[in-house]
Length: 130
Image 1 (tube, rainbow, N blue to C red):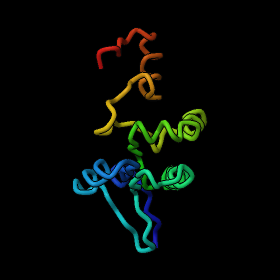
Image 2 (spheres, rainbow, N blue to C red):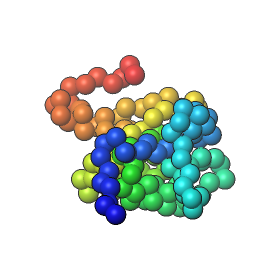
Image 3 (cartoon, rainbow, N blue to C red):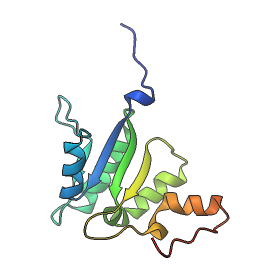
C-alpha cells in the first residue's frame, strides 16, 4: 500500500516530568502506548536514573511522530548537556519546551527557548519579575 506521510496534524506531544505533570497531561489525552509498550511520556521521581531520562529523551527526539517534547525545567537541568546538544544541532522538530513544576517556579533565564527569544529581541526582555 501507499506510505502515509506525517504532517502537523499527525504529530504528538511527549512529556517528561514529575508524577503530577505527567498525570495531568495523560488525563488531558496526551499519553499514548503502542503495541510494543512504548510510550510518549516518562514519569521521573527520585529513583529515576539520569541515564534513563537521557535515553527516553533520545528515543522521543528520534521518533518521527513527536512534534513537541514538554519537560519539567528541574528535570531539564539534570540533562542540560543533552538539550544543549539537541539545540546546537539545529533540530527544530521536535521542539523542546521547558515547563514549571509544582515544586519549583519557572526560571526564564534557564530556558533555552527564552534565551533565543531574548537574543532575537536584542536582549531587552526583563524577566526579573517572572
